[in-house]
Length: 258
Image (cartoon, rainbow, N blue to C red; front, side):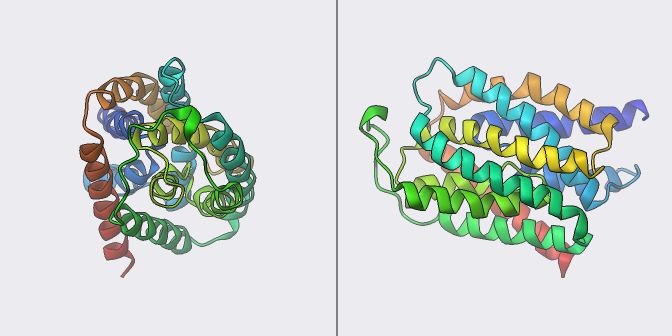
């Protein structure tokens, strides 16, 4: 790897992981299209969708871990929700991650595009003002949480994502979880999910180790910074930024598919 190539990959990882910590996502919604298109646009060797999903899967684990560690003393992680959604999304992501090697590159991109569109739609559904609700008073439908997480895990495992970019809208819109609790809790769920998707990618040889290590280094630095910033930003602003990122990514992916 050349120095310019390493710097490019590091910056992609840094930006994605900063947003990961800031908005409670693994960052795949940003990193997947950036890794797929930016190196090629700058004249470097292009990654295949399978390689991009493999790099993203491994890096999302470390970005999520860094974010969870930064939130560990905040009392914002809803542990029962982590248990129900985390186990379900882990099982789904193992299956999706391992099975993705049998899918075509176009199919991997289509799955990502579908996820992004679904997440974008949900981000614009009106949400009730629950942001002041104490964590110990929050309730949720366990069956809906588990079922949704399993389905998301299957799809997220295919594209190497932790799935938080669609779990976050589900938690906000369907389960009615307050925004800051959603951000912290989704990172913990994404951490479990990424164990499954990363394992599937590694076991099926879809991970280029050099670029993955560069991305991991960036995530360890950037994710905690994003967490600190998120505590100072209005929740409506956080939701708007996430919605904009999801829409931009969905448009780019579908533009290239068609």
